[in-house]
Image (tube, rainbow, N blue to C red; front, side, top):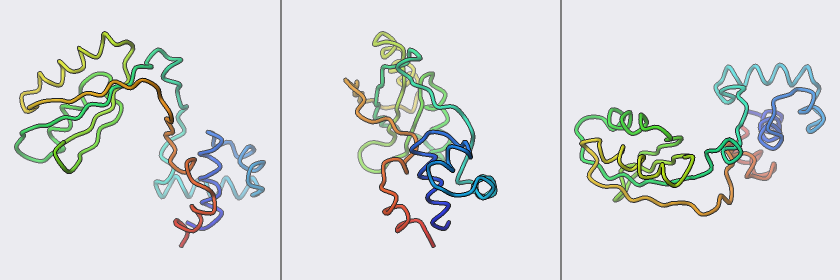
Length: 160
């Protein structure tokens, strides 16, 4: 990636859109160049999709629960992780080091559904125990990491 690519990725993250016209307004990069670079970023896997972001609170899935899962499983962790990912409401899952084997984020409709979530995890035979954290308020929910950086930092760290 060069500086123009980084500027585009940062603008996409800040604006929440891949509209070439909006990106041109933000970066000053010509629209034809933006089209070309967006295609290259898609082909290289940097841009994964063109989905709309959702406001989970407005949608009715505003209860966020963070669950630490301690498990005793045989075989590759990916196989066990598939069982965790099969629990309804799980939006993110991480394989971790330390005392906790997995950290899972779930978006739920109400506090009543937290019990169902934990029961579903504990019904998986390999799960030894869970430790849940019920969030009080979301301070940041940014799916696009570049939006949390200054442009200069990204250029310095990501360009060849």
